[in-house]
Length: 516
Image 1 (cartoon, one colour):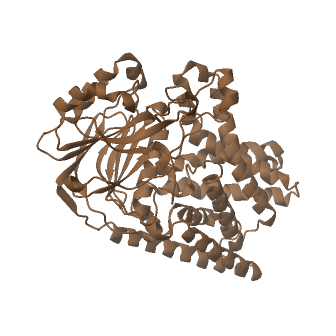
Image 2 (cartoon, one colour):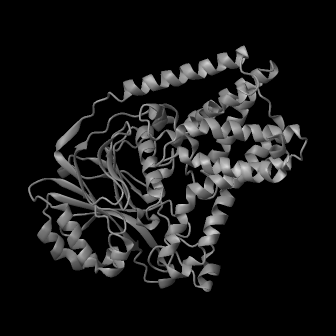
Image 3 (spheres, one colour):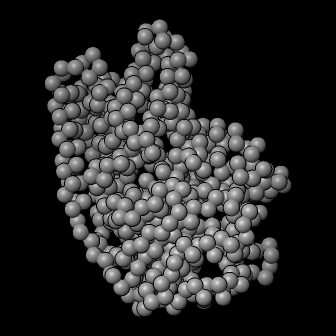
C-alpha cells in the first residue's frame, strides 16, 4: 500500500479517477448511496498522502481533476449519444466524451487545490472540505449557462423520506450536508476511539435520523384535487428513427389514438416535446380537421414545437423551442419560448465560426434557437377553473431555485421532454430525478411527459402518483390538483444556502481554534 501511495501516477491520477467513476454508482438508476461512505474518505486519504509526502500543492489540483474526470465521464457520457443521430457530429463524439467532463472536472480540481494544504484528520477539516466542494458545485450550476447535473444531493433520489428537507433548505444545502456525512469515516482512520469524533458522529447520526422522521411525517400529507378537470399525460415512446421513417401525420394519428379523447370530459392532454418533427407552429393549421374530429371544446392540448418570429426581414428572424397550449381548432391559446437552451443541442456557440465548418445544432433545423425572455404563470381561464400552470421544457427542470419566482403559485408545473436523444443510457433516469427534487423544493405537483424517458405525475412530496418507465408507451390520468402551500425554500431560495454556508464558516473557525 505504501508503495502504491508513493507511486505518483497511482496517487494523482489512477486512484482518484477510479474513485470518481465509482461514485457515479450512487446516483440513479443504481442508487448505491452507501458507496459514498467509501469513495469520499478514500479521496481524503489520498489528499492526506500528498500532503504527508510534501508534494507540490499543484498536485492537489491534479488529484481533484482526476477524481472529477472519472465522475463526469461516467456520469455524463450519455451526452455524446445525442451526437450519433447526425453524421456531421459523429466525429465530435470523442471530444464530447473527453472535453465536457474535463471542463467540469476543473471545478473539483480547483476546490481540492484550495482545501488540500489544510487537510487534517479533524472535524473542522471535514466541514471545510464539504463547504468548498459545495460552493464549487454551486458555481458549476451557475457559471455560463450552468450545468447543475449530479449534485451530490441527488444520491438520495431513491429515498423520499430523506429528501423532504429540500422543502426547507434546497438541493445545494442538502449537497453540503451530504458530503459532510459521507466524509465522517475519514476522521476515524487510525483514531477510532477519539471521544470528540464519536460525539460528532453521534450528533450527525441523530440529525440524520431526525430528518428521516421529519420526512416520514411530512409524506403523510394529503392533497386536494379537482375532479372536474383531468390531466392526461401521453408517452408515445417514439424512436428518432420512427420520426425519420414515418410521416408527421402518421405520428399524430398514433398520438391521438393513444390520447383516446372522451368528448364530454374536460381534459388537459400533455404531449411530449418534439412531436412536430417537420412543421413549425405556423404550419400546423393544415392538421385542423384531424384535431377537430378527434378533440372537442372540452379539451386542451399541450405540446412542444419549433416556432419562429414573424419578422419580414430574414436576417432578423428568430427561432424558438416552444411549449404551446392549443384548443381542438388548433388555435394558439398560450405560448412559452424556452429560456434555458442546451449548448450545441439547441444553439451553436460561436455560430459564425462553426456554421462555416458545416456544423449546426443537434436538433432539426440549421438555425440556432433564441432564448425566450420570461417564464410566466399561465391561467387556463374561467372555463378551466382559473387553474394556474407553469411551463418547463426539457432540462429547464434541473435548475434548483430558478424555475419560478417566489410570488408564483402554480397548481401544476408542466415539464415536457424528448429523451430519445440519449438512448438506453443513465441520462433519462437522472433527468427524472431532477423533477422529483423540484417538486419537493417548490411544494408543487409536476406533470412530466417525456418521450423515451420517464413520464410521471409527481406530488409535492416527490412521490410518483402515476408513472411510466423508460420505453413504455401509454397514458397517465389524474385529477387536476390544487396549489398546496409555499415551502420555505420556494420563498427564500438559495439565500438559505448562503445562511448555511455562514453557519459552517462559524463552526470551522471555532473547531479550528480548539483543534477539534
